[in-house]
Length: 137
Image (cartoon, rainbow, N blue to C red; front, side):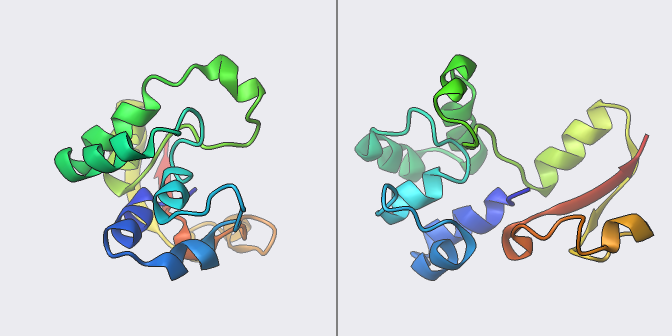
């Protein structure tokens, strides 16, 4: 899954190349801010001046939660395949622990402890901007 920390840092550092290399270069997402927003909430993200202001004023987690917590999931019928949440190591570890998982650890592309998850078929969508976590339940 996409690692929001990489996208957040890229946006902060005006790293346009990150978004060009690691996302679908859609013509509807022409600004750096729109490319960043697409990482966590493609739905109801049209008020870019307000989002830009919030980016400067809010902490990362508060900003990301603000634009994902109020998504009307019925709208996803019209926006199939769009992002509606965000994940990073901190959030994934917390959610997994709350869900009863143990032995939670950060992994890497093709570096899983399990042979089945080191194959080309497992996950090759966008390894350079993804986060890999393993856990046992």
